Image (tube, rainbow, N blue to C red; front, side, top):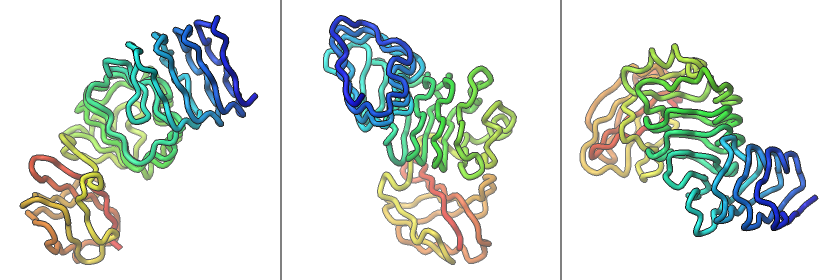
Length: 290
């Protein structure tokens, strides 16, 4: 089956209704539907888009679109319960994050309105490299970030790690050896002892307040990989720079301006973190010394 139009008599799409319909490329959901239950469209690998009618008031806690290959999630105008922003499905009040399109690239900064990330919300998002989780999040569903296989950094902004003992596999198939977990200053020991968080080999303390991806704001370090020196472009005025190893130990700290040569000749080869505080915002980037 490659396409299907759900009859207008249907009001509830039950759990697993279209699960493993691997060839399904299009689905029409009628305006009579009010409920879409858990995993209703799970593993519809060929489904590229979904349009949620204005009539839908209930969506299951476990991502109904888990392991689809969605490029778009649309919510029809007039829906008072849900919204879609940049490929991510939320409740209208923004407190619950339900699903992210699996084709999402690069970095995601979860809004501070979110306090609940549903089961498999980011399941199969295999092109995500960085996720920033606000301190407002107090719940992660089963497999929330499962199969985010190329994640290289996670910023957990909560000073006390969220208890993950009740929902397993939150970071299933995330490479916990190569993915660095960044936590607030003073929180490393807590994360090292916390269920599932402790599985990350590299847990680094940073100033996570107002942190941003350095490449998103046109501030760049070059060359990267670095040799014996580097420069920072895109800065406004003077910035405080800290260069740390992956344990958070500060190896170099100084004030720098745009395009100033910063010598790192004394450093051995390896991976380091550079934190730049500029105009009250801290930017972070991982660099390699060759």
